Length: 215
Image (cartoon, rainbow, N blue to C red; front, side):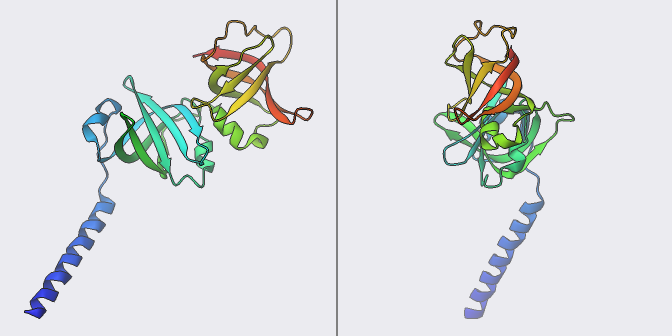
């Protein structure tokens, strides 16, 4: 009887191992963004265009992708090595794999950093404020385009922040001939183009504005 019991346990463990190995080779189903709500608790694949990117105070990466008139928040787990994530751009199309869950009443996708794949043929090269804040020295002295939200508009200066407000960048008019910023309003989402420089007097980086586009 004891031998039979051991045999049953061995076959049970073997069955679990076989199912685990099979699961490694099974590709999760692809789900359009507008059908995400039908797959709560399920591991799925989906794709969309990046519209938001931010980094929390704990170092977690938050993104939003959009498609089929639907927007989906993406929470990236284990984002210790954020190098590849920081190279993503506004407007890039990506495919992600993760588990659907509800957070504060909204659906989101929990993914790991290695479960994100770019599918955009050509990068837009439009950065996010949080990406600039994470490695400003990489952008210093370069002409860049940055997506963010307008905040604190003055005559010749305004600030550009990420969606949650964790990071913000000082933007100043480059010359008196630069397009007026008087048309900007608090909360406007824009793409600002300019040269990133370091202001030694104020000990901060700032964007010398060349132009901007309201989204």
